[in-house]
Length: 578
Image (cartoon, rainbow, N blue to C red):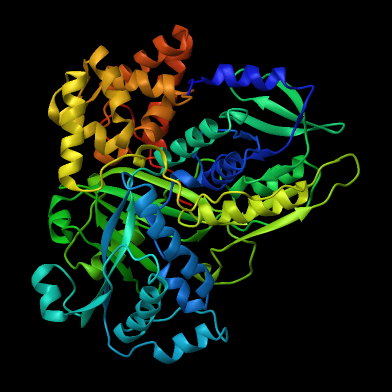
């Protein structure tokens, strides 16, 4: 497949202004990308745009899990849990290089607690969250296992006794009476999975065009105005249908299309990456998925031998631009961590990266944010006035069920267009999972073969396979041509960064640092490294000295002010409490 950079696809779209675009998708988060992929598999070209980078909004701020949604059983959302479990099991196969099994422990502080209130919540007689004992959790896990019966990829649940759980995890609260163990999955690199879906779409339907930093700015007569957020230039296209997948920004996009109806009521979720080798060792390979004093669900799991991920909060917030993890949220996360792992004594100087996103939930008056449905729904606005095309707006949705959501959306669209839905994406391999061995020995042999062919070190090849799957050979070839390790981080190479820029429609420095690599989740950031990457990007993208300086300064500022990254030799300001 011919690699097309952003300027090339933008020029292609401009050249097609006289023709009608069958489908314009506004919002290149995971749900917009999923629809783009599904349409491409049907041979229906679409234009996918986003005012920022691909998967740079809420889709870049999840708990990095592909999970069945155990807690949704409590509110009776059986269909959502069943769908989530099935999608999880398929993603473990279809994206095996990025989706990994994750043993999960649910500590119980009583055996029978919350049984009566759980029944009331299940029957819809109350939405107030409450405590859940081990037997209530076990009942939920029985359903969980039942939903997995046709696509099982991981072991069934089991109950771990108090003595056995404390022996394996001595820091666990002494108040725990038992632990329920089951398996979910970790999404190692969400943004890369999103990018690979775009590549798959454009391989199957070359007429499809995905462009970052191109926003829907309004209407001019019966045409849609698109604005290049880099050059600030605008042009118009004609669309047969617009699908609003802008997530937390959906109401904003609708207003630009003359639709004044509020659909979204967002909540902010924040996470912390912390340097805690002691807690990482305690957790081993497990995630703790635990109930808090205010009956919320939080989690903590190891990222590597030194780092853990701690989350998440759930605070009403309808301002999706540049959300920040507040001091109050950090205090809350530290407090609930100490409830389940007493003596953890988390400190702010252990934070290496923080991130937040706004969940695009349906507008609701529920006092308990956890009671708001995470399922997806579509709202269709028929042509009206000077707008000759329908607008289909997506409300809700989540990473785990993006594919099913996209298929539902695609079928509705195709039905309106008088076209059949010919193929399902359910069993389609994603990106670097295609042709990748599943067993450890096979992966080692695959990496060794890449090392021999590209004449790079075995360890380098193995790292590339872990990051790019079966696409690692292409990256290895680029590394062999430019083998210089990056300043301050010998795990990444100049050739690798050049490949990312050339092959993945990279536009800004932050695209590389925050989304094309896992540097923030590896405690791998430093000012010399960022300046090194910026210099490579400037050469590849033809930046002026002024643009290079701006990109570097903006990246450093965002990392310190929005993401609490220390040690960048820049003044770190305390984000405003929210």
